[in-house]
Length: 457
Image (spheres, rainbow, N blue to C red):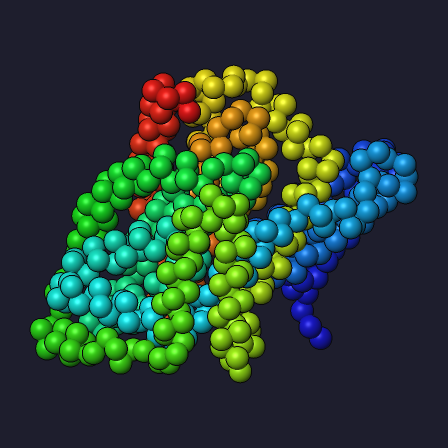
């Protein structure tokens, strides 16, 4: 007989959650609280990481749709059909994630990332400290053009391969790369999914975001690198000279697995960068640019198109569909407006306190709740107080302060280390992440307040 597991416990919890929600709608005619029960209950189960998060996310939005429909039948003005709920899903963001996954899959299969990694790693000449610096610069650069998950999926496997070949501990590299890609993505609307969501909901100008935050990103990098080097100084050591020669004597061109895929990948990345940079001036959204290039890559891939489609992280895509729907239900029942009114009760638009509040509070929430739902819920409040920049900064930094759970990029690093049977210690990530997070939040708060005084931003 099968033992009672988390699936059974979750099913019982869901049944109670639905029963409470239906009572709230039918008996007490309180649809907003009923939807809030579904949202909180779903997120509690997702946060346990004991059940499949994609399954719970999809079930959660379906249950929210059911409660909204019951409210509509009961004559509640906030009630709605499931079709109306689905309209609140950020399909533009979903398409962007799918398109970027296709581009990364095709490029990775060509060997272009291995080629680049071997090229840049050779500059270190086998010195672990120099190799660390080279990888940090590499991560910081590509974070401007790829979202954080894609960045880690590109860089982390290459880092592990090179570190293992040189007999260097790869864990410090992965931790530093995860943290670096989070704060380096701040100036780019495509650098992190939360940035894309906030920009979409607030109308934040892509060029303005880059100009304002690129100097801050450089400052954070220059502050962080010496801290990383000092923190991990004992982990670097030295590498045997013969091993270094053996690794870096490999011709980088031998990494190219398919010349045709390699050439079209190079072209795709060039056009992707140009499209992201110039597209907004012509009304082309990042999702449109990415989808055009992804579609062309699949067309040129011909027989291998289905293979690349199968490599897309569909569980993540459907998880986001459910999550967007759950937050949409909060919006439809005016709960997000109520939250904004509550915040408005104790902060004033344009004040220093408002800036500090919109930096530190979302960052703290992101540490425990994942930065994407925090972005979705608080974006309307950022619009209300005309400070979306503070929210963009906060959710990216909050991805690594206190816990590694706030950003999917961190979990990619942890997952890949576990696959190597050499897992990153949770407490190690917490120590360095929290130290840098507090330093970054302090610097960023001062930077945003300075901009507020000088330019009224």
